[in-house]
Image (cartoon, rainbow, N blue to C red; front, side):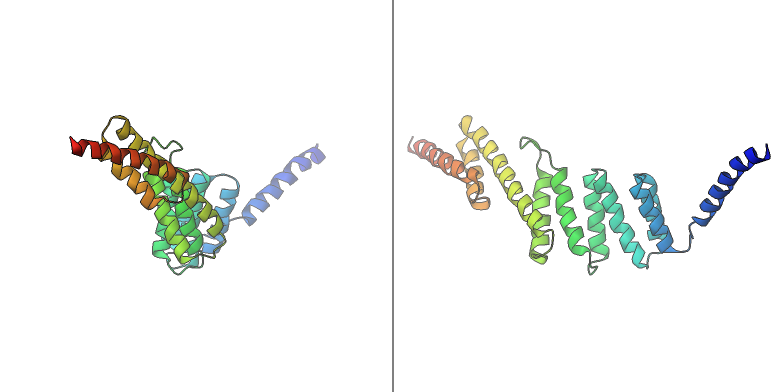
Length: 219
């Protein structure tokens, strides 16, 4: 009987000792940050964000405050909460403009907005326009950054989709014979996105639009 009890009690005692040895020092930002990282690795994202915010609030002048802000943004990104991610990456760049990870954060602003945009060009593409602006700022400042090739690829895709949007609207007006409204849409494609396949179609449509406008003037 005693042997049986020992088999039960000893593992429990071991667990209790282990748990006590893992106790986090609430006055040590490094210890708190390590615990938050463990929560992220365990997919306990809400708990992780709470712990990261606690680091920011309790140790605002610590280097871990900047790291915590960046990881909050990362956690939102991991969860596909891209609007929240871009906002938190922006907070990081605003508060820590000289941090060594600013390039990464600026890239992630563009990436978050890119991923937040709808896939259909018929819908509102405001996030794509914001993403393009964010990526351009990133590439202008960090043209040789590790993330630059991926940003450049995304920029090409963004320009294509924005050109498709303009062509869609231009054709909408053209089919309804609203040529004065169609013309600036085609012209915008040629001005803003001349390197896209849509520019060739816009050129053709613009020529037709001008013909109809000239006939209208002659009447």
